[in-house]
Length: 324
Image 1 (cartoon, rainbow, N blue to C red):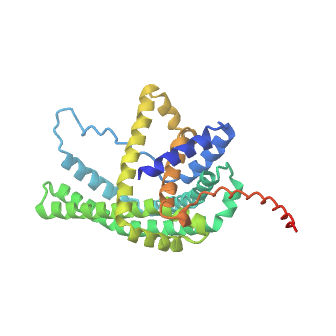
Image 2: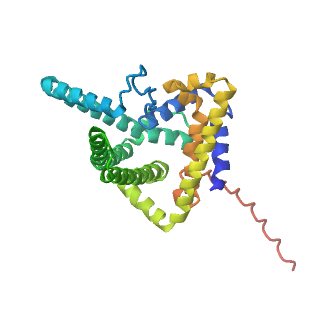
Image 3: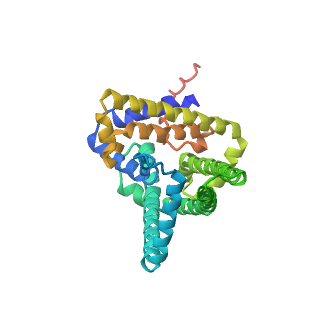
């Protein structure tokens, strides 16, 4: 696992600092920013809910929820004429935004990969050159996302219904608690499976597409054979990636603390933060490429240096005539 760290680190130095080119950072940063659309998402902030009243009335949270549920139900039933169309409109709008983000980020994956592999800051060339492969990746991610919604939404609905039912009753029951806990466990397992599929797709299947020029399902079939032949190695790879991500996050936090959170203000800006984190993003893109290359030259995405041209052999001098 560690063999791929040094070449990935060297590639970061050569691409971004030898020499430093501001325009190159901007263009590669744009490709990385586009590739990361829809991944980090909006940070879910934990709202500082203070538990309701503190004026001594002693209203219980369950009673508050029951009161809120009753009011919301009555309000929706009284305004179905505009609540339902508004909900459908917002749902379709969110779906359209998700499709656009998914399509653009699929293009960005190949644009950023092109820049890291060829050490080039280009937008127009990879946008058109890998359009077919990126569209295939988009369709694969779309199907994967829809399958995830079909599996997760009913489970989430059952968990929410079970919890709401117990709250409205005013006391938990063993069957409801066991049902909610079991469904949450199933959701966790499914989340791990989908996370692994996504990780393998972005780290290895996309580079195989990049090499072969094929579609995403055929690249997955090729990588699937490699994965089934080396399950232990790729399990260690995932565990090492978790450790590596923790180390990188700790380094970023250390920089924030050292700059008195000034860096945090810049990193929070959508495009500026990506440009500032470009060395980290290039390393995270290059590391799985060098790891994949360890399984054979057929998986090496980096261009090989041209073989040296052999110098022409010196002419052999004619033999001297034999003495009589």
